[in-house]
Image 1 (cartoon, rainbow, N blue to C red):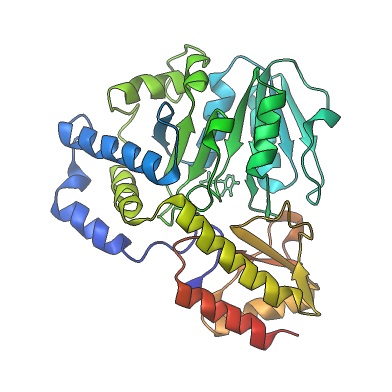
Image 2: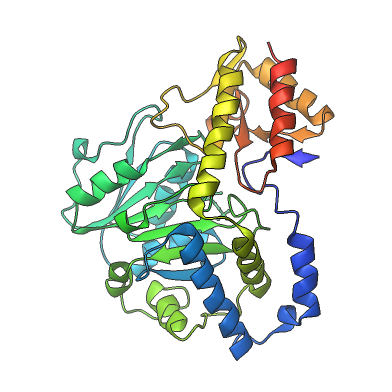
Length: 348
Ligand SMILES: *Cc1c(COP(=O)(O)O)cnc(C)c1O
């Protein structure tokens, strides 16, 4: 079975080899206060910065999930939070923040529209929270869109959920302060860890509260190559190994762009299904959502399964009228070709 589920998704096939290697080398039982651990975390930080083109002065942290990042952000700043969303993950982030912070504002925008912040009122300072890649409906905010927001609101801190795009497409890290992603999507790793990438400003302006998962506490620990808790050492090791084997993000992004074009070409020619997002400017590169009548979507998923291909179910309100295709780097060329030919042959 080949999984095209957009998370948890197909992991790199080298994962079992690296797990064995970690076991053999004693990494799985390593003391996280030891020099050996510090060497691993340092190498991982450097590899991530190199491959994903993260600015030198940004910091990389390892936490347990994207959802934890929502909570870390909500609890680390004594400022208002304004959240923009067009789908289920962005909305959930808003709901979670609202439970923790009084000054939380949410703005919904239509998924076919480009996000324009000037149409909504917001506090003159505070956090702007954006979902770069909305996994539920297959939309994304482009780098120029985030750059425009950054230019227009220089006094705001910008936090970006890039869970289903980081390590798949090139992100302009300079244009926002806090970026995060869990590793079971484009990183092609088992779930249970998230990568958080922060600007110096994000760390300087975090509240100086050193509770367990406050950003200040996480950052203070990382200055000494340490973590606030016994971390997912195996996850960090797998991240190091897979990143070392990965090409630069510009190469990966081109591969994914070519693949998404191939999917779109086939799907756009069909009568019974279509890409749910019509506007190419806002359509995601890493998650393709395909729409059709409930009966047709159901039968395509069943047929695909018989051919050894697992398509992702639709999400939230789009559960039964769409299926989703992960366009993540761990999928191999030959696997993508199998799905392309399945779609070409079996659908009207
Ligand atoms: C998957 C996903 C999450 C949640 O990730 P967890 O690892 O379950 O916390 C959050 N945001 C987006 C955009 C996602 O795709």
